[in-house]
Image (tube, rainbow, N blue to C red; front, side, top):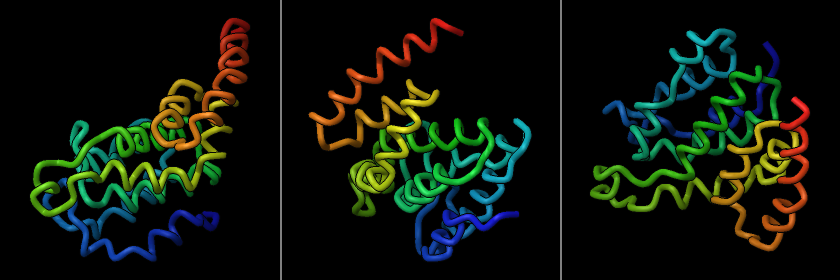
Length: 170
């Protein structure tokens, strides 16, 4: 197994102090995340799901913020296409969700804002994803996280035509 910066980043987080959607602390998140990165089958990906921990439907829990940073880091790593799609889907859930009512009561009413800020760390990776094949998810993510609207609109105008041409050729 190669060295993964995302898992080194995971070591920096006090997961046991964070609330998780499963009702426990987030202490198990690094192991689940590592399993997701190494998954090779649809079943392994499903077993390493972050849903029910980081988010339930579109409702976020405190662990979502550091998980967003892990996902951004992992998008720079070598993972299978299926895992990459799962990572992008999880990132979309984090930046597009909203705080679970228990998080609001605990004083975290806007977890999605912190997730959007964390996702900006990978802005150029998201633009690369947009340009190379996972355009619809990456575009939606960029629309949510890129605070430079002029840049987003410029890249969007340049990339949307190329993405459509590529889709027609398939």
